[in-house]
Structures are given as C-alpha cells and as structure tokens.
Image 1: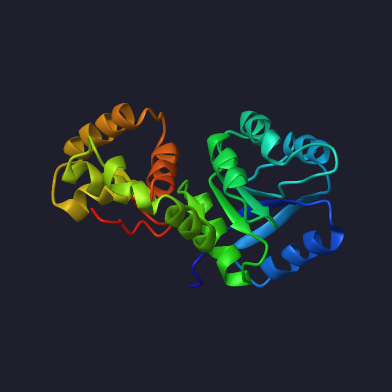
Image 2: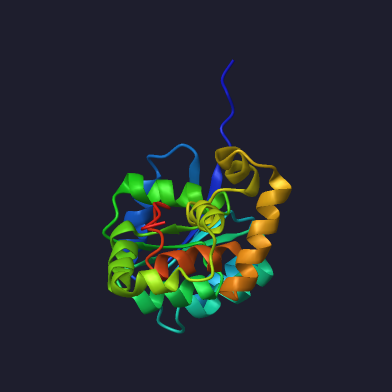
Length: 223
C-alpha cells in the first residue's frame, strides 16, 4: 500500500517571470510540494489569497507596487494558517529583521539551492523559523564583540531554552532535550519573553541570532 504524502501548497510571488518560473520548476522535483498559485505583484498576491488554501507563500522583497514585506500582515489576516517565507536577492540584515518583525517565518536568499529552498519551505510550513545561514552568521559576527554583556540577566537554563527556540523546537522537544517537565519550559519561555521584551518565539529566536547568542542552526555561542 502506497503511503500518502501530505502536500505543502505554495504560492510564489515575484515580479521577474524568469525567477518566478525558475522557482516553480525547481519545486516540481519535490513530490510533497505543490505550487498552486503564482503572482507578479503584491496586489495580485493578495487578491489570489482570498480564494486559496495556502500553507506557505514565497515572497520577493521588492515588488512593482509594494514591498513584499509590507503585505505580510495583510496576507496573514486573509490566511491565518499560511506561513510566509521571504526569498530575496538582498543579503541585507535590515530586510531580514524587518521581515521577521512583520511576522515572516523566514528569510532566504535566491542563491539557495533547490534542496535548501525545499527544506526551508518544509521548516516554514511547520511554523518554525528558518534563516539563510550565511546571512544569520554574518549578523551574529557583527555583534560578537559585545556578546558577553548582552548575556547579562539570563540564567544558564534560560540560555539553553533560548537555544532551543532559535532552533525552532517546540516546548515539548526542549523539555525532552533538557530532561525537565514541559511546564518548567513554559515558565522559562514566559520569563524569557519578559526579560527580552518580546512577544513571540520568532522574536526570541531573532533576538538570539541578532545578539550573537545563537546561529541560524540554533548553535549557542558562549553559553
């Protein structure tokens, strides 16, 4: 009996037809990913979203009518269960930070391979955060000189939990990894949110990368 594979429904939003079609062609080689819509502008993407069931939207930063980052909130309102992955030609820290702040699940560069893109789509579809590794490492290195002082106020256990958040792990997975109860982890996550002045797991993960405490892969730095 053939095992049924759950297919991730994707929309590709890019104003360059060669890039848009190229991404679609790359994804055709992955049986568990299906491109169900393509858009060349922000307006077209938002209009299409009203009549679609989407798991992931791949959105370029620069679209002819609006910034791709600027439509993240509206797209999420229309499709609350859709996850957003920015796919950009710009290896810009500010774009990445702004995208995550607006609610994106990740930021990937167009230089990524087919397997990297497919892997990022699957991570985003699970609700976890995925960042271009080189860009995240570059950002981390920019703040390495001040990382020791940035650790002030966090306990060793809180840093371990923060490392788990940066890797996109659920509370249950972090609890299992650290050998403690899930309620203990929930308490640590709440305390982290208070100490870091963030309101979501994505913001906490971004904080860890931005402060040089963790890389995109969740590897902790000097903890």
